[in-house]
Length: 365
Image 1 (cartoon, one colour):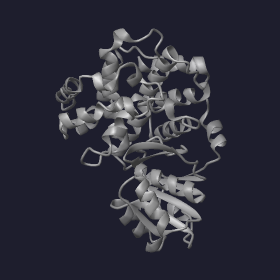
Image 2: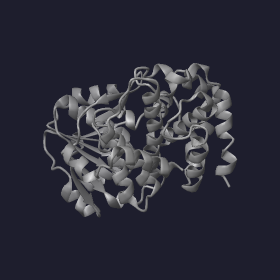
Image 3: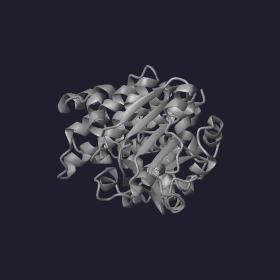
């Protein structure tokens, strides 16, 4: 059972409270139950303010709120270093606000970091675990992780979160991928000189456990925040072999999938490679390599996540996807993961993709 293994990790590392972790980050939280409360809470308009949002619904919604002049608002189409450069060439912000989903917030983090301005983050949906982290993922050729800084304030529009539908699935999947990252941590402990940071490892395990035991949006929010804080010194407790696959897939697959959705897809593929190579794995891994894939399938079916994670594979050419996945070992070779143990170029990716997409019949029942 996944929960049993996570509790075993927490018994070994000790549990960390969200309150204590948040104090360390120095971020203030404001929860807004209504649109009126959100308008009261947002930063005031001013010449030094740069407001970043997406180029669709949230841009229209922000204009509808009528809080900011249009020249303050920058529309983010792609989460790339080039987008950051363009915004900084057009403005010299003294305050940066990111208003939207993960792509917008990642660009806002880097704009704030490079300009030295404080960041106010307004995640309009619980789509990924970077809501409270000082890392961002941007495209620069391929997708890469960059260090930034924590936001000074996070404003959570609860009334929007409650209506976010499938976007909540992306957030759950990003946190559940911590299971794969922790599996890689245990592999690195067994096969290299890596010594983990127990505090941050416990945050990642606690985050995943909270999603397993989730009852409402508050549980999901706390899980996302814990997972983000677990990346304080290193993202490895929440980003392993599965995120290396996602970084390869994200820039090239059509249809603009959410980060958490692609991470969920990559989590299944990574677990399947673990399963096919279980006999080669050392003893003492956090999760049983021979059964982890099947446990995740069962969990994803229970939570109505399976069809969501299969969609990117069903809508894209398996040959294209396989060619991308072969490059995984080169994404971050200095971080010991499954792709150091099982070279990605030797994986029979077409067979793996067929095995995973065959689950689509189960997802449609």
